[in-house]
Amino acid sequence: MERKQNLAEIKRRLEKRRTNSEIVRFLEFKGIEKSLASEIYDACDDHTIIQLNGAIAKRIISRSGFTFTPGKSKRIALVGPTGVGKTTTLLKLASRYQKEGKTVALLTLDDVKGGALEQIQQYSKKWNIPLCSTVESAGPVDLLLIDTGGCNYYLPDRIDQLGERLAAIDEIEIHLTLSATTKEVDLYGAIYQFSALNPASLIFTKLDETLAPGVLVNICAKMAIPISYIAFGYPLPGELQPADPEEIAHKILVDLNHENYHFIRQLSI
Image 1 (cartoon, rainbow, N blue to C red):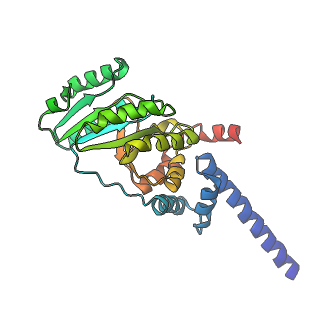
Image 2: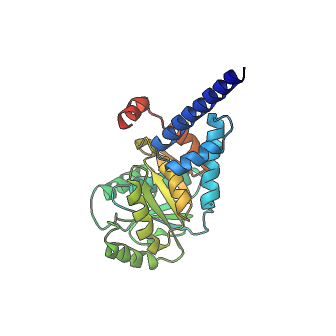
Image 3: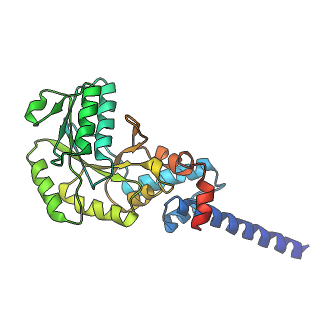
């Protein structure tokens, strides 16, 4: 009898170990670092989606003091590396605030006359949002949204030059825009280099273009800067949501699992 009980206990422990391994590996594949994935697993009793969702949200909140309070500034500038979707995100913000009944104007500091400028011009006309040539010409609007050119953040002079231009604008609030598809080491590099501009928050784009959005959990665990918005979807206006820990956790676990997720996951293991 005792032998059967011992065998049953061994079997139970092996099953628990196997389950632990599967869940932790799943969280790792979703982009969450192994140590954090193990913490999340250990914080749950029955490891349901609801419990895992809550455990991830708590890690986001407890480690970073996850709170972003929009300032009273009427001038918001988006900065960030090239190709992360700053202009698209700026237009998503413009659409959101316009739908809330606020008067909005746009300004671009991007000196490169390319696709970004054409995109702003197109939607400025389509949505009847003024595109200004200077800060002063924006007039008495509720919000002036300022686009900037992408910077190679490993060339500090570019960031310094951008900082000088932004410093000339009074009462400006700066948001660092990053893509969730970027390698994690480069995300940390960008946050470190752009910290010279004292950004108020991070905005993460392209969450629908990665199978590993859990990188946001890692960022919150290590960096003392909150996330203000998450953006995904194209064409415009797409989706842009105020960052909420519960919502981010849900997207990591459920919403952003594409149909071919399990097949791709097997290839990567």
